[in-house]
Length: 251
Image (cartoon, rainbow, N blue to C red):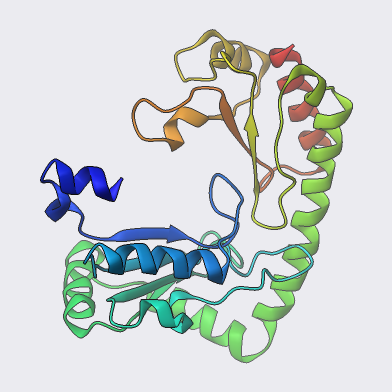
């Protein structure tokens, strides 16, 4: 891809690179330290010492074992690159608080980010931040994380069992069982059309179940035989019902 940008003279349009390193939305995959080092090597070889943005929204939401990798801030391959690590308390702790954070080792970028944010929202709620601070200091945050991991693992296993029992693999639908996060990234048979305006999605709406069409997660022209399923909100009975309704649509 970088070679193609160089050959057609558009390499100067590449302003940064974005990584989802843990339980990526939607793929559920993680990036190893080795893979990150490969990325830094490719960029360095191409003289693209550009900002690297790492999204850590789900890095604490593993189910049983933490994925063994470090952030770009600890990866020596990215030394000399402007590095930005983004985290949030919304996903792992409390969805309504909308409190996040960034660690940035580039003073000029950090200053510009703070200025833009100030104009966008006049600052994150002091009250919400005080709740997070108190939860962290009193151990509530860690306790809720532990409970959340158990809760999401149980939900994931429920939906996994339903999808398998309903025969999705036999129908040509496949996925990697996630080790964290809150999604299944399901690949359908070649030629399946899961897109927003297709009959499959329309039938899903009629059956009372919704999925995220996979083509929304790709650049234009990408495949249309993927779906993203979330188990973050629904409880046991509703997850079972949703899985059964989806299977009926796919059949």
